Amino acid sequence: MIDKEALVAYFSNDKFATEVVGITVERVEEDLVVCRLALNDSHRNARGAVMGGVSFTLGDFAFAVFANRHGISTVSLSASISYLGVAKGKELIATVTPIKEGRSVKTAEVMITDELGTAVVHMVMSGFCQKR
Image 1 (tube, rainbow, N blue to C red):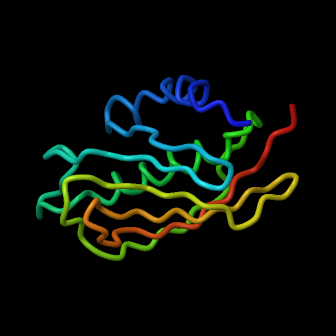
Image 2: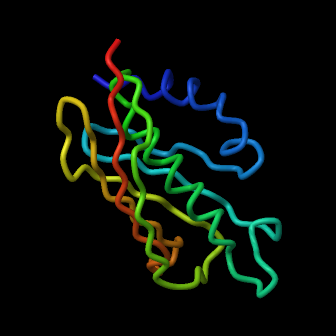
């Protein structure tokens, strides 16, 4: 069983993602992690769109929560990101689902939308599971 409270407490130490950027963990399940970010002016670039690095940080953090949800330390190996559209809403929502979870490598899909359903970013990420 996944202990969401312990996972949220552990990742609260990721000060950049949680305090500077403002990401929260909404759901943690066996095959699903959802993280959310309420957008403000500090997340926007000179054109007024959400900065690409903000979207990447949200996706990277959500993948980290997903990859570590069973308490096995996992570090990122690779990330592929495609920017699909401009967020029209006031929030970004990252949804992570598994592609394959092997003994040493976990691969997952991260889909980032706004709360209106606008597709903003698609990522595929892999992580290496460190043995205890």
